[in-house]
Amino acid sequence: MSRRDLCAYYQGGYVAVYPIAADGTIGAAAIDKQETAVGAHAIAAADPSNRFAFVPHIARIQDNVLEPPKNNPGPNVILQYRFNAESGRLSPNTPHRIVQGDLVGPRHYIHHPRLDVVYFSNEQGCSVTAYRLDGANGTLSSMQTTSTLPAGHSERTTCSQIHLTPSGQFLYVGNRAVNGSSIAGFSVDPASGHLTAAGHIPTEAVPSAFCLDPAGHFLFAVGTASGRLASYRINQQTGALMPLAVEEVGQRPAAVLATRLD
Image 1 (cartoon, rainbow, N blue to C red):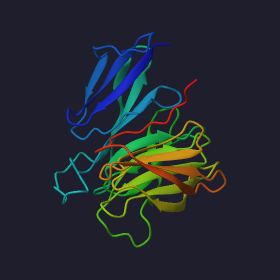
Image 2: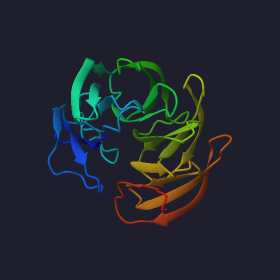
Image 3: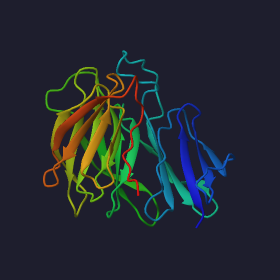
């Protein structure tokens, strides 16, 4: 089976598919390009069957929590595609658009490792939505939306990334704020995929990026506004995060990845 790299272009307003060579290099020319809209924020590896892909678009363009809202409307939609892994081509699914409620702003998503469930972080809505995936048609239907914010939180905040432990037992979403940034944790029902809040932990200011290690034992979050990396141990019974260390990493860190070196 040919290997492909799927990319979303926020400013360009499109998604593209590139070939991956045997040596791991990515081809310079795209196999396919699909126009979407400005604010195309992600296109993850296709679903476990490798036949479908989704493109979330946020509800405000250039929505920086360090500044007042610009009220520059974004598409506020999830686009659904069929994916041919052999040819590398995307084609609009039916229906093509999942229109969102006011200022929801789907941003990133992740598939459950065993269930036909896909979770989206909602940037402007400060929430996470669980969607049931129709394995035959590749379409999503909303089954649960829950807030990522701590009780009583009123500061201007937007959500960032979303990650699941490899076991599918716990899910985490980043809340970005000037003074009250946090990582929200949820336990995942193993039968239904429904989420139950499992607490919040303060983290570095404006955690636009965070990750889990490959085993799902640790979480690492970088603060775009603080220039620091915070590490946490994940309680394997409750999903609670225990702070471990904070390190200076330089101005405006934008990504973090923990990987295994064999």
